[in-house]
Image 1 (cartoon, rainbow, N blue to C red):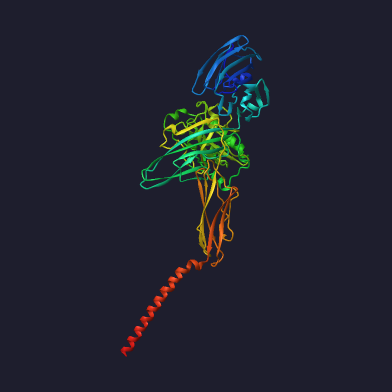
Image 2 (image 1 turned 60 degrees about the vertical axis):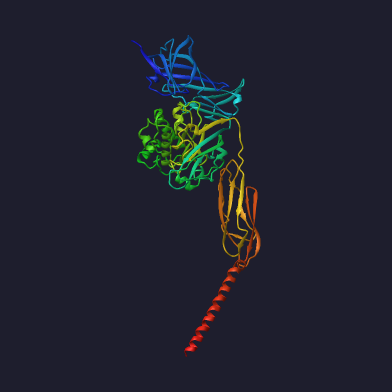
Length: 622
């Protein structure tokens, strides 16, 4: 009986993309893989593979796989008999490997042990003072007997800030940190490790404004905001804005007045520090906002019947599960269902929205991954919103940026009652062959704007129609650190003299003259004897170059009060005082009273004389 020749497609370990396999379940595999990361960030990968025949009817002569890396070198394969014939074929985002065996694995239970070696710089990124290592999850249709991974990382990378999943063991040896993982940790996820607690980016952004109306307008630009995972400082804004305010989503809006047909280029220079862990200890979101982040919107049609039907299919009766559990099911569905289509980047990208993406899964870029996740999450009762910004990538094929002329990236976040806002990136998990971008996000995602109440506003730097030049967005990794220095000042606008007894108003202006946002604390306003009618007003956060104006009403007790007083504003440990003089009503009323009395006297004299003349005339007639 002629033996059947089986061409086995086995999908291994890290950097694997699934494809059609033939009778792969006829073989079992065991893997022992080492990723030896050099100080230069280049990973030397050694995969020791044991292939075991589960049948007497088939044997393997050839091995094919796809490595999820487009930049590999020094590729070789060996078995106990010597060097194996191995060929590589680079694709857009992957590399196809074809290995021919020197011997056949014939017979039930027979094994062949061999190894595959290569180098790549796609799996490690050096960002300022931080290092990141990303290893995609294993995808295999064959029986998995054993699966072990060891990451060998230089000690000078520093202590790991985040590792997902947690390693089975962690040791040091010969200047290296050894992190060991086995089948239990890695069967459903890849490895993501961050060495370094924060990363600093310097940015130089140009906003191009234009007023096409016949009258002057007041318009705004969206500045990179502080978030749960980033702090921002501003060195320059040219020209200086009229004010910088904070919207409901937490965006910083710088306001400018443009005359008729005026064009204005605004330069914003600053730095952002991104954190591997949330800097908010007790996250809180008001109930009103939670409800708004569940509503349908353009591109996020959470109430659409197709979205609701798909959600029912995804959750499979787990509607009562915790938000994080439901979010994970939705995330995994989006990652597996949509297919990234780089061909859409060659033309002007039209945003499809969640429903269209659901019906056209093969035409997705980052916007569709984001929109579909948000719509499904909101439909499931999970508050979710969109983040747009700069995403650092050392390999755009594996971690693409595909929004706004290839400069920006879009990714979603959802609200968890314990963790607060949690950023995830289904696009990158899809394109990087399973790197875990759900349980933790890296230091590569720098937020420019937050879109929650609206799916279209505000517009981030570099994405409006006037900003067609990629040079309008310049972001570089910095080795330096910074410390935000807000500088709050208060100005009390009260008249020196006021009329007793009548309600009056005055204005308190809090201005931030520093480089970072300030949240006024321990704010109070007081006087000695005056009564402030609405003194319980509390100011919100004030961004750099911004100010807040608070209007207060006050009055003296009676119309006859006369005294000198001080209006005192206390904020952030500082006190500001303004003298004020209260004068009784009659002091201010003396001139009007005198004038009235004088005019009354004149009128009285006039009518008296007139009356006498009339009386005499009547007497003569008699």
